Length: 183
Image (cartoon, rainbow, N blue to C red; front, top):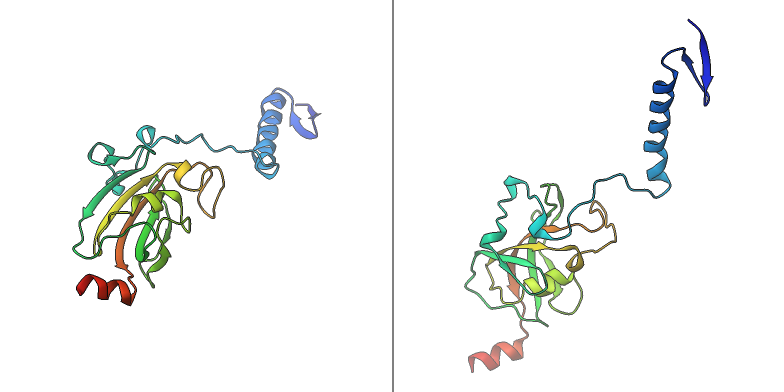
């Protein structure tokens, strides 16, 4: 059996082409991501075209779709104060990708506090949490343009659909508002 060198790979006669091509393919797999290439399959950016892992319990047909493409559904309607744009609020949340992979949560610590509707959070939250009541739990399916868009963010790939469960813990009101409402 003879050997020959094909593009720097020593092969046996009769199998050189296939083996050399497989090494070349492996080099592409290793080097393309390092050069900024993306080998991941293209994910849909429209939630209506996405596959949601069954464990997520997402059923878009049962959810409300807003004009922006955000899907929302109250899992539990709270009985406390209603959140409006401009209100400081506190929430607990869990975020997952459609595959079911978790990427963030606040459920084992302090609630996350921010002012609703002023751009402190992704647009899907600024839109999707308005109208919630304290104690409520809402499911949000956020298209990429209302999430992080084409920017990868930590474990979140670019152009990802995001799935959130958000519990509204508190709507903060100042003392003057509280006195005006009661007096």
